[in-house]
Length: 458
Image (cartoon, rainbow, N blue to C red; front, side):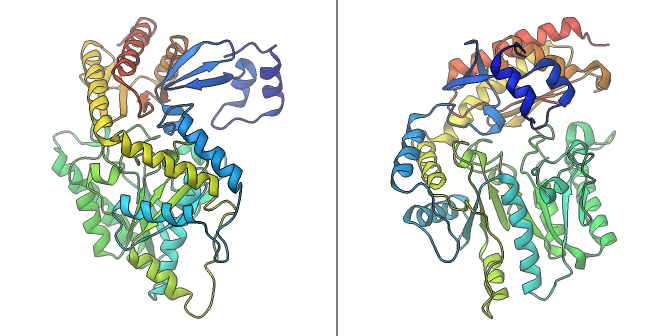
């Protein structure tokens, strides 16, 4: 990655623990030192440019150096650099952003709660689900069902909801009461001779089987990303959420929508729930909320959830939940400005056009490649699954390191993608233009051709 004798690399190796990084490999290779950003590109300490086709961590929707977001933060820092929202405190900007989020999400009559990360937002939804059922005389409804290959965050409950073994193995997770059902992956999950309708029915039946086995009176909520992000950019079949939510309603189970990656235009709609036909009781928002220029997240809840919270505390108690930086004035200012920019650029139309262009490139490249099994996704959230054999969908053996090898080649070619096993993720900043999209495709094609030479199909 870098010259390990360079001062920054040497200090980083000596003192810094990196997220989702192998410690031994990091000590051998060192860091990629990112020095600056401009538009959809970042530059390393040697001045080499990379087109970041993952928007950092799915999040820098407005690029890496947006002057309007920087100015919004500077203005707010000059006026009020911090205050909290405990004990009845607020600011005009907090109230305005809460109102805006309720309107944008379509949660009519609902309310917004602010936190500072996606993990905190998802855990807040779980705690509110517990309150909701307890206030209605059903305190035993505590368990949460997530799905295999889902990603919901890194704090203890959020990581327990993940359906990815690497999020669990070091920490003895998941915690008791966090359950998992099948991932709605048509490419890998459908049985021989099974069409999508039958697949959806089987997924719904499996969810109901789990609910009945555990006891409906013990299940509080079901949580889902509209489209799996870190689990491989998996788009559920049509009518999947309609059938799943029929099961949930039958057993009085809340539906929690993790919009942390999918929200704010990423999938070609304002929110992923619109892309997949999901009708949630609560929504967790983060990442694109501020284009990641400030750590801020939010939960938007339906009226019934707030009514339960209010009822629970009717005798004078206080909502026993909060984060120091909930509703941070600078985060709120940046988020409000980001939403204004999304509206001015007509983010939904722009993402649909750029996403269609990028997907068309990927599909053309994939048809000619012996190792591209599937191109999938929605909007500017696209995945490419590499396979050993296209006809049988046989994956590469793990020790062949297909995805990580592509990742290394792409870096050398100045392209940052996301390797999720042998699924390659592309989630570029939403400000990409036609030239950016074409450049991503060209660099992808060049890297793929190199991969095919070093890792031929069987």
